[in-house]
Length: 324
Image 1 (cartoon, rainbow, N blue to C red):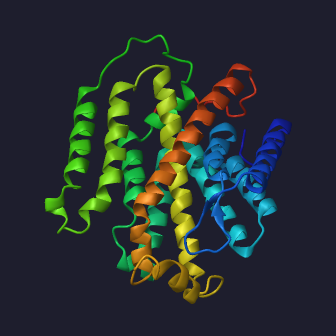
Image 2 (cartoon, rainbow, N blue to C red):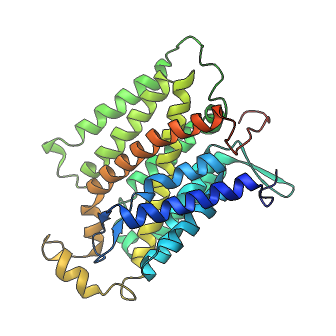
């Protein structure tokens, strides 16, 4: 089925997911956004990747975007509707073996990785990014996870019911590599390394990358690998959402967000000299937020996809192309 041909079930799922986003945004309180008065990160951040998992990257993008637009209460929230839409797009592409456009075909993980690369490049094209070059540690960790796992995420997602009786096998190399990375993450937090100012910022992303490698080494076979694939796709989508939100925030400073508001209410109370310092200060907070959102997305996503699949209602039809 081409992406431009919508079935009745496609339209129904898009409408349901868009409505769900509106309800979540309007009813459930969000996490306040530093630097943007009366704005907050809503729980639909955790739901957006699920849209891509269920209906695919394009319809997932549409559902998240339409829901965000309907729920928007300000110009800032209108702009950030693109964030959840990109999250659904990236998660959907990661769980799709091939991206097809007319006569061209590209691996889904390559398309998702390209989007994340463009977002990271966009960061370094801003004045904030040039003065806070180490800020995208979370985003580089997501990109690294995509490059390491490649087509494994899509294959594991599509084979959610295959191989569940397979004998468990340990991939020692990945587990040992993950352990070494976690040890490194612990070492860089030691006081004797504080003089190297950028190292402490690397600890949380290193813990995450190490954890991903260990999980992959432990659960790369059977039903568990499906859950790991959902978790990884959700994380990468949520991280893409995060970077696009950062870029939007930076580009509307002075237009929709007065600089004096940021200085008065956020920089001075925290004794921070400038906006790039504020971003670096928020790295640990952002890490915790994104991991929590990923956990929520994975828990809901695994259950929902398996339920829809067993009932025959999952819109996505696995592609029978070769593994990539």
